[in-house]
Amino acid sequence: MKVKERYLVALGDTDATGAIYYATYLYVFDRARIALYRETGLDLSIFNKMRAVAAYTEFKKVVTFGDVLDVYIWFCKLGNTSVKMCHEVYLGEQLAARGYVVDVYTENGRPTPIPADIREKIEKVLEPENLITYSC
Image (cartoon, rainbow, N blue to C red; front, side, top):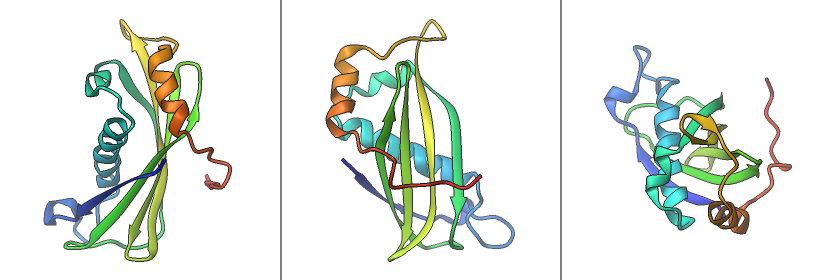
């Protein structure tokens, strides 16, 4: 299941060149992540136990102040203690950026197997990432 969020690029989201600042995408991804968890039926209090441990972004098109982005997010990989969320960001019909964030479930600050009730909700909407390749 892919969830779509819209994001209006604010002036403060841009750098001195007028383009969206690269770190802004992490903020955009985080907003989409909240929507994905909510749409999956996960209680948002889960964020007290989930820790982002990896993030990756590829920039495909210049985005500037005032642009409206369509941000798609989905669970693309489920591990024992972690879940990977893939993102695609579109400006109109053009891919502007794509990437992923990996969250790890923790108890007392340590990675812990994702509880069965949470795992079940994620498994129901999981879309494998085999269609997406990222260059490093």
